[in-house]
Length: 145
Image (cartoon, rainbow, N blue to C red):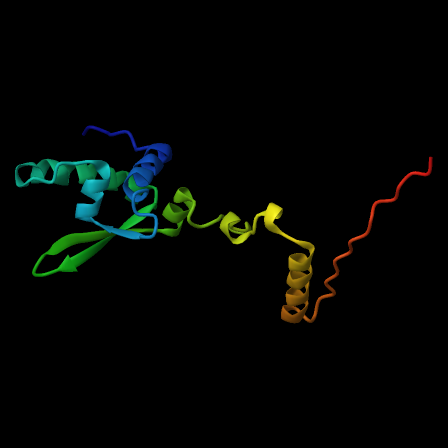
C-alpha cells in the first residue's frame, strides 16, 4: 500500500486564499465560482480534469478543517458548495482569534477627536454601569527651568 504525504496547512491556506479572495463577502462558494477564481477552463471537455483537480484541493482543505462540503441530494449525493469553517475564516483574516479585537472594528487613531473619545467613554459607562470607567486627560508637567 502506497502512503501519501499529507498536505501542509500552509499550502491548504494558500489554496483557500486563492479560491476565496475574489469573493470577500461570501463564506460559501459554488463549484463554478471556485473554477473561475482559480482560472480553470470550465469547458465540458475538461469537466473530469476540473473535478479531479478540485477533489485534490478540497482534500487539503477538509484535512485541515478549513472548509466543509455542502451536498445536495437528488437520488445521489452531489457537491453543491464549499462552506468556510471558523478555522478557514481565521486563515483568511475574516475572524480574529479568540480574545483578539478585530482591527476593522477599531477606528483610526488619526481620526479620533477628544469629543469622540469622551462620547465613547460615556457610552461605555451607560453600557456597563457596574464598572467605574474613567478617562483622565491632563497636560504633561513641564520642568521648571
